Image (cartoon, rainbow, N blue to C red; front, top):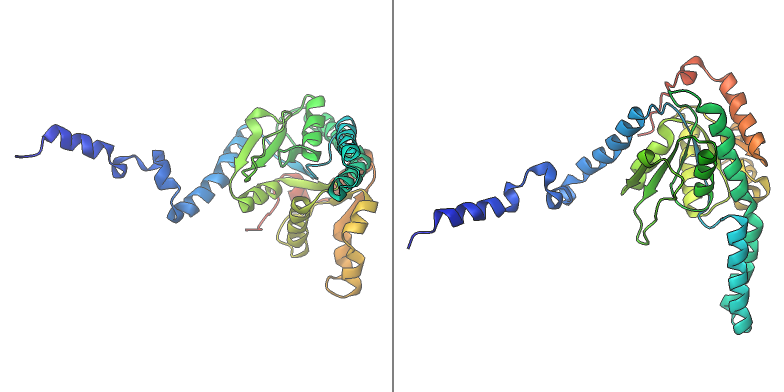
Length: 293
């Protein structure tokens, strides 16, 4: 008995091979399509940023665990309550000690918020938009910087990343400028493509990763000359002894000049404005000459 032609056509139409390639998610997720996926992650934010006339950015990094003071106090109170119920539990005592330190560091949330407000209020009066605050889009210091821009009624950007424990975007990012990435490398590229400055508040591994990526590119001359500002000298001098690296000869003394320190939002902003006034004309025109990848 011959096969029913209509059934044969239905089988063909349902075959994965018949799907239009750009609508075939299973096809796009194949390992062989990685290069195409990377290209899409590079291009999509580029088109949206161009549409929103974002010409330059100030990138703000910092820890997700550094929250606003009221929330930090709440977390300490919860940790102390848990310890009171089990006073011999070493892990709970450790949690209280960490919560106390994070409460001390919560002042950086307020500082990042004020920095975002200060920069955005001064620089986003008319398009094209310069010095748009850009963060990793998550909580903590990133939220604070985006929130400061929102306080000023200005745009800000969030570059979220897919993680095993899903990271949600904070609510202060401009919706049209919030992006989700799968590839850390492409996300890092977008952090630096339009950057006029990078401000690193206290943070952990992610902050250090992004900081050293920028420092390496600056040291090797593979990106535009921008200020790299470490906010909170006491914290950063304890985390990384850059002078030790220079003393050991593993970096040049001149490399120490790649780093500035700031203790207040206005001090960080003054460093950026001073660098801008000394910048080459091409940098002021937004022609960054970025060649990192």
